[in-house]
Length: 196
Image (cartoon, rainbow, N blue to C red):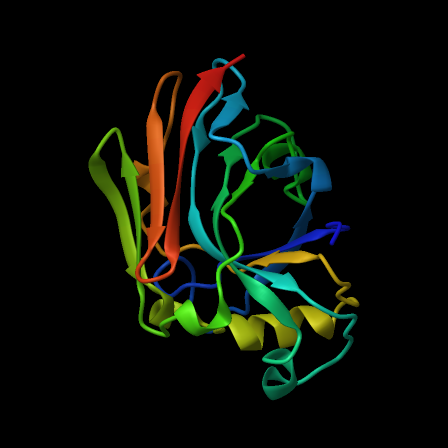
């Protein structure tokens, strides 16, 4: 399947913003989808990485319930949402999050591999910098699909990344860094950072 859109949620984990605040929906450029083991970032700009659970959509859906969402999933992904801080207004997060290669994705994992309370971690150069659990999400993955489907249609091949746990303030990366993101009992991705 060809990915048409990368749908994304921000502020979907407890401890990042008010627990009463709904997640923020945004999209990332499809040119950001990256299955390699490298990502290029600009020099002299703060850049960080975020471990996220992703899902690939298997059929067209619109305005579905969380129960219906369980039947439109091709498989799960371990993803990295790469972000570069910029000095100008970026209200839709496009310039900071939609650069080429800024959505690193794993191979597709089977549905049966997902554990609701799985631990999510980020290691940079072997040092643990971020840890959380899927159960810390305000909206679980099925609720996230339902939430987005009420905003826009989801098509086969679309990817949805569902947000990251707190503590990304320790996830800054620079030239030469090695990053590993893991989701317990699901899988992991690892990649090298290069400044360009």
